[in-house]
Length: 208
Length: 208
Image (tube, rainbow over all chains, first blue to last red; front, top):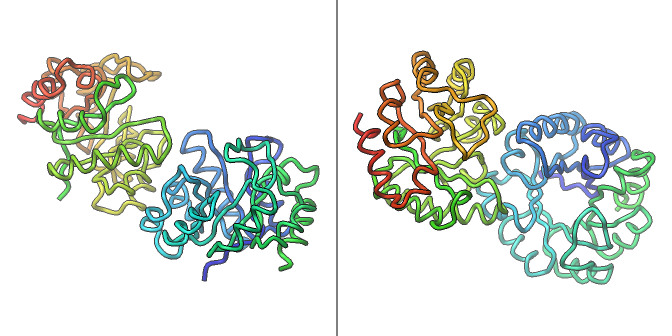
């Protein structure tokens, strides 16, 4: 049985270098995150493999699903539980063919027709955003807002993980809008106390 | 039975944009290349997949092994016959675990100890170079020369594909030094007539 988390903490080593990927994963799990996503856009494959492998060990020893952002090859190499793919990454249907039925596949889908495609391509969940403005990603498609999220959740056939600019306070209305869960990155990585910050999210998001 | 080519033509769209990857592959096969390697360092994964898939179709319809440089995920997605990996890419042992026994795996190995490791890791051939100076790759380890190649071939337990700065003329001494074959890129892609240039290589390299 696939375990799709509600509170996805994305490890970030781009917007901060105070905590390593592994440290962030440990703090997030301690705070109550039920999914960890490894996200690193730069560096050699060997470095990415080493970092991803270290995070995978933390997740597997805590029985928390470990998801790799973007890279199907890294996800396979480190025996991750899942992969999260954007619209410019490997298409979900190809990823499913490569990874098999037991792998968690999440797809970022900025609109309902792409969400339908993700469903028919065999994805397990969809990422939707940006719900709020965020500095950690350029958002050419524009902010969708809570209304856009609610409309999207209303038609999506897969669990919706909301992303971008979500704070612990905002996650109340995000969940009310129909999201299955949230994905957070800098809200945690840049927090004074990442563990406590995750705990604040967890109290809202994981109490469903 | 794996078919390891002797004349690997690497499709290049970085040093020239006159010919597409697919056009280069077609001209190379027409000229007598018995292996095509797709090499593209930049661009979105979707673009890489589209280009690689087009080259794969050309290769499979001509029964020529199609090898993807660097990316295990792309090689899997387009059903390539093999993957060629550098020392900063996926380690051969991991690639073998992911890709299975029938996939061709080539590893760039600048010295004999790395060649031994490639052998024990399950690689099918090793790439060795730079044999001559080349402008298409920075060569921090220095040019190995024909003597370096001969020494390397003498101890390598796998077929050696020589690379870097190899011209049709130079391929005579390269093969004499013990190479199983050669890999060429700009010597073909920048040639006035790529098909004829490949033919000149082929007459030396594939006549073994």
